[in-house]
Length: 164
Image (cartoon, rainbow, N blue to C red; front, top):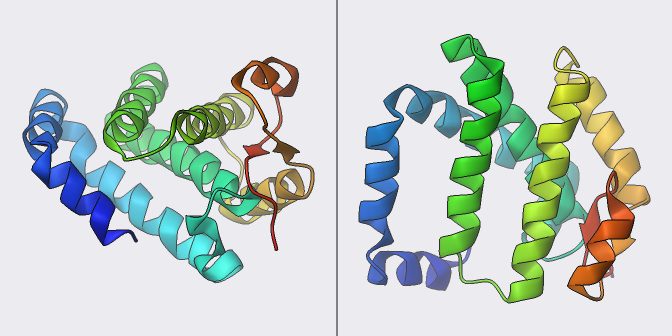
C-alpha cells in the first residue's frame, strides 16, 4: 500500500469524514472491514503486488471488493438494496479521498460498478466461481484511454496500464 496516500488521507482530515460515514451506517463497519480484508487476501494470492497498479489486476480487485462488500453487508443486514447502496457510498468515498488522477478515479469507479452489477446478476455465486469469472474478465479487460470510452465498456473491466 502507498504510505504517501495514507498520509494524504490523514492530512486532509478525511479520517473524520470516514468516522462520520460509519457513524451514519454502523452496521456496515464490520462486514466492510471483513470484505476489504478478504478482497486484498484473494487479490494477493492471485496477483501478488500487481493489483496495486492501474492494470487489469487492479480492476479485478475493485470489482471483487464491491461484490464482497455487498455480499457481506446484505448477509449482515438482510437487505440487498441497502447493501448495494452502501457499497457504492463507501467505495465512492474511497475514490473521492484517494490521491488518484482523474482517469484513475473513473477507472476505479467503473470497476467498482462492475462488481456491484455482478452481485445483482448472481449474488449466490461462490467465491471460487466469482474469482474465475473475474479472472476471465481480467483477460478481456479494455484499455481506457479517455473517460468517454467508458460508455463502450458497460460490462467490461477497464485498465489504464497494460500488464508488463
